[in-house]
Length: 251
Image 1 (tube, rainbow, N blue to C red):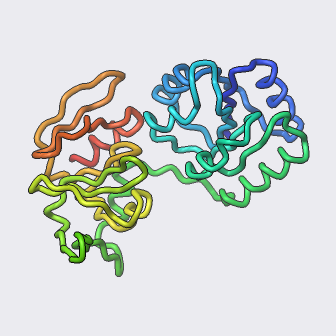
Image 2: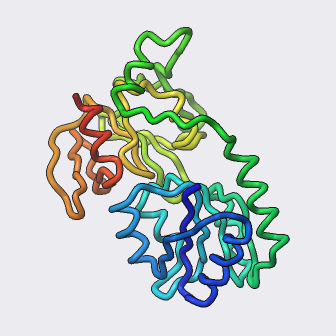
């Protein structure tokens, strides 16, 4: 199991590291700030599990999730309980209040093991996954979305959608006509509903339609900026850890 600790108080980080060692869990990487963590996630493969303090020296760790599409399970560690609701919205495994005791840590690891089943790990690259999706048996993807507009329902065909995005805790679709509509769903739920040949999740906030791409340019930190046909409300940036898969998807 690959585990990292993000904690600005180094004595607390070392104490948690020792407690994990007593459970035969090795946490070699320790990070201490929002900025340092963002750089690390952009340059390294994401771990299986993160122990994450909420209040770091340069801000709240929630800022990391706003910029990076975190692929790991998370156990929050904090001396404050007012962030619990926000933490669980990020699909965390547990929320441990400091000082952490051995029993609470054991229970949290038990929750992690229940949530993440032990499997024989098989590494597939994008082309392997793509081949598995060719001619899927009885697999149906969304062909249209019904949108409530006032007292009316409007049907939007999938080919008329440039992108899906999240903003202010809502999920929206944006059409080729330059209109956006609020959906009663989440981006996570869309993963199984959108045809992977047409739509790709470029970061934590965006799915884009391949047919809506107008241009692509290099962006900071080895990322890509995608320019869509009509959508211009926000910068559409391919997360660094998704760039390779995105390029494969284009081909």
